[in-house]
Amino acid sequence: MGIFDFFSSKKEETLNESLAKTKESIFGKITRAVIGKTAVDAEVLDNLEEILIGADVGVETTLKIIARVEKRVAAEKYINTTELNKVLHEEIAALLAENNSGDFNYFEIKEDVKPYVIMVVGVNGVGKTTTIGKLANQFNLAGKKVVLGAADTFRAAAVEQLHIWGERVNVRVVSQKMGADPAAVAFDTLKSAVANGEDVVIIDTAGRLHNKINLMNELSKIKNVMQKVVPNAPHEILLVLDASTGQNAMEQCRQFTEATAVNALALTKLDGTAKGGVVIGISDEFKIPVKYIGVGESINDLQLFNKKEFVASLFKA
Image 1 (cartoon, helix red, strand yellow):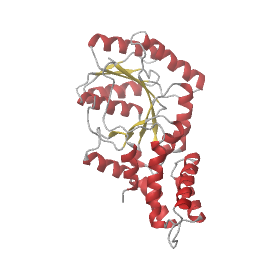
Image 2 (cartoon, helix red, strand yellow):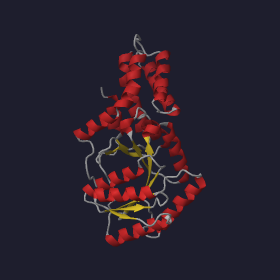
Image 3 (tube, one colour):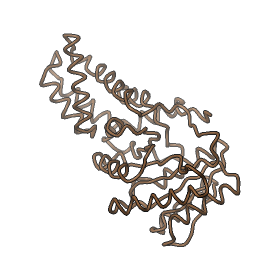
Image 4 (cartoon, one colour):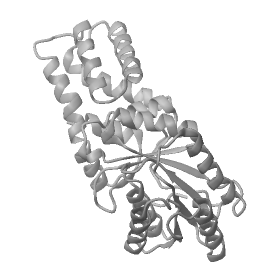
């Protein structure tokens, strides 16, 4: 069921503003790199490669984009530098269309699943709890009954912050004392959600990228305990990454996808960074749908990711 349309003109404007630094990082530099050039030659392509890598698109993804542009230059015989942005736009859009990044125009949850369970993972400081709060707000606005589970029992601040968000967006929060078993919190949250007839459960987890085996074991335990209450839970394992950390976000994605079955990504803090190219790199490399992007500090500044709109905004003058 489509709940709300994310690309109103206001949201499009917010996206454009949030990508301003990334646009300057990529296209401002391209413009300067082609001054005095009339055609796309080897030197222009070398400069383009350097610019894309500098914007944290990632080496592998950059090489794919350069190869596509080279192919177009060879096929069309002559592409001048003023046409370069158009070609780049088309080839990045085509590259993203080939992977599993998806186009999320509407917010959807499975209507035949109740409660729909989202387990949120990611390291401390990436905006995990804020993303949970904003996500809960969107579900709440859509008329869904939401409950949050504070299964990050290692940091008092995490539990406290989740309670603050719960009050702010008017949703219930289940928590236990500090140091409690995270799986026990998840179990209690799901059990109470079933009893209360709630539609959506969002479970916060500890943001510790400790050794991979411990992380894997901890998340597996939480999953196994949840499945005693709701078979097949969690329905979504959402990894939250901070776009402003560039290649560190890529590495965190690598670590978490090896530790658990991540099937959705959220990229936060796009509004304050020139490293927005990381969205393209992560989407291309991991073939996991980028589902949400954080484009500002407002409670409504969590947008569903639409690759066409994202690339169009990136290339908008």
